[in-house]
Structures are given as C-alpha cells and as structure tokens.
Image 1: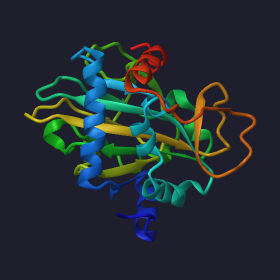
Image 2: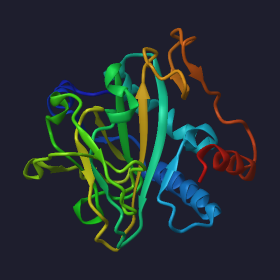
Image 3: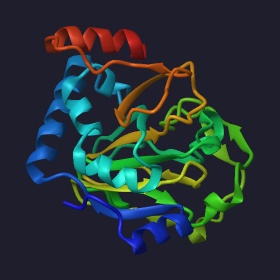
Length: 257
C-alpha cells in the first residue's frame, strides 16, 4: 500500500486539483468496511437512504477507516502532521439508480478553502463511468470560489441542491477507481457525478481532512494525528465502546436520518 505521495502525484494534485488512483486498502479491508456499512444501512430500514453523515463519530469500523495509518500518512504529505476529520459522508448509488451529484465545489458552504484541507474519496465498490463515478474539471480549483445556485431536485444527493452556474463538461474527467483506491481533491475543485446506469452498486466513503488552523469551531472535529493547540475548536472523542444498536441510535439522533 502507498504511504506517501510521490513528487509526480504531488505535482498532479497541485496542477489538476486532484490526484488518483491511490491504493489505500486491501481487498479484505474493503470487504470489512463495506459489510459494516451495509449492516448499518440495513438497520435504517429505509432502502431509499443513499447518504450517511458522520459515521466516524459513532461506529468503531468507520473510526478505523478514517484513522488508517497508510491513509493518514498520505494525507500528511499534503497537510502536515496535525490532522483532524471535519466530517465524513457516504454516497451510495444502488444499481439502475437515478441519483446524481450536481457540479459543485466543496468550499461553497464549508469554508474549507480558507485553511489547509483535502477530501479523500474512497471506493468501497468499483467506481467507473457506467455506475456514476465522480467526475471533475481538472484545474478548476484555480478559479477560486464560483457562483452557485440552489436548485431543488429529489434525485440530487446534495442536500441544498447547490450547482455551479456554468461548467464546460467537455473538459470533464472520470475518476475511475477500484475498490480500496481513493482520490484526493481540493475544496475548490468543480466535481459531480452522473446516475448509476449499471447493474452494480457504487459506494464512496468521503473523508474531509483539515488541520488545526480550521475555522469551524461549531462542528465536532476529530483529531486523528498531531498534538497542535485546538482550544479554539470543538473536539469530538473517538466512538465509545458500545454495542452496535446503541451506536446506531446515537448516530440516528445526530444525523436526523
């Protein structure tokens, strides 16, 4: 498994706003994480639920994912030794599903562009064009924050329906990943995804990594590496050693799902 970025990968990240594919998890690890996620989804009793927020704060398996040593070593190559998780998000697209993600920038509401940050998009299934992989506009991160419109659409996985007003889709690149591979992208990179037109599921586990310079004092941030002063932030504790059902109930209350 790769544990740091090469100079070529670092240059690609700076130039394109994204670098991929980066191998981080073995087949056995992917199978474990996917099974744990599917067990949580089954407990929801709602087949229409396709996004899961904040799992790392309540479930040991999700905490193990975001604190994986090889993953953090790779992120450290971009952010330095003081790393926190500012959120996790799972997008799940069942086979032949109409859900999509509109063209957007992660920075539009988060403020992640104001301090060092990166987003890890980790594939728990194959992710390719037919099943609605992430698509990006390379180099668009250099344009800074762009104007977005909020457009309600039941099929859009973004809660606010935010979308960039103008996108040159002829420049789009498919972020094709195998299970256990990830991409890292910058917060101002324009990206989105199409519906799943295949007979297989597409599941991505997204981790938002920031540093102790974060300006999000109202969100529960989880320190995963380093000992920098974080007194200006609200630090979360690792998941308590509780049974799955208790963790599930606490997560449902937190997420409102």
